[in-house]
Image 1 (cartoon, helix red, strand yellow):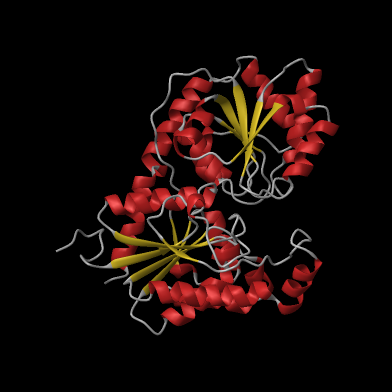
Image 2 (cartoon, one colour):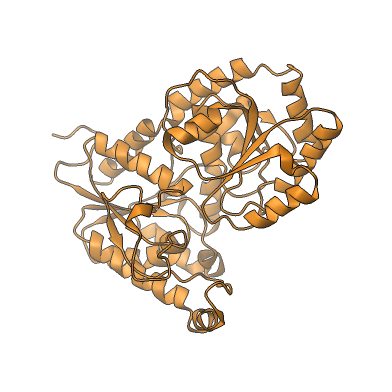
Length: 395
């Protein structure tokens, strides 16, 4: 007989999620899939081209932009919900007038089902775009006609489901709805999802070896929309305060591929006279990501909305203290181990000054965070929890 926390032998799992090699969601997805495979799960990854791919507008997918080729890609053009002028006026008008985002989303859901329908378990990693709510709801309705058990992990709330609240009741037809925080559970319940269908687990991060290197700077993750809810303006203002206080620092800022507002963010730094204090980069992954965090004294998360889980768990796994607000998931993950601020420029500057003046014991805080990450947020442990949910729903 299988172990109590494992699925029956021979049960195939179709995992539908982002597999682009420079994205925080694919970073999380790939480590979770790898950990599940190490635990004996038979997993087929099904992915698609989204706006990040250079081939997003064509019936193609760039193999070199995938994490690896151990996946089943669906080649279907991506149409943005609010297209710009990048691809010309005619295409913009066609996308908006014909609602190609809606039609392609439904087709994508049908193709996901076509590739996954023979699996005993289907796990959908919901973010946005090609892995948003529209493909998921189509997949869910089609899966109802099969013997497959459908699981969904909700990372982000899609604007479509906010505008059409009635569709959220479909989540109640899933085997389980998985979220990574009580904060997100509350958001999903507010949409009309039965709380008894929801399982809260931790967002996982790989626990890599700590390097012997000096920590000389600070790190900030701007996500996919750096100017929305990330506290970026207050962060820049804090740099001007630090300059006036004669406390110079270096700030490593990295963003998701194709980050909205990245050019404006760089221009703002120039206008405020702090561009020389910032080093910019696109998304890091794997050992490179760990090395970046381990080169920093602290991670700054002045968020007021969105998800901070990637930056939080990465910082904790790499013994990097966190300067953060008490919004979104931050206090839920940090507990009493955070350097908390109110999000204002003054509070960020004060926290950094305390560190630079030696008034904060970074070493002890880093050790405690690393211990908490190892015990609670190791992606291998999270994989065990997910596998237990699979097994429980077989009964």
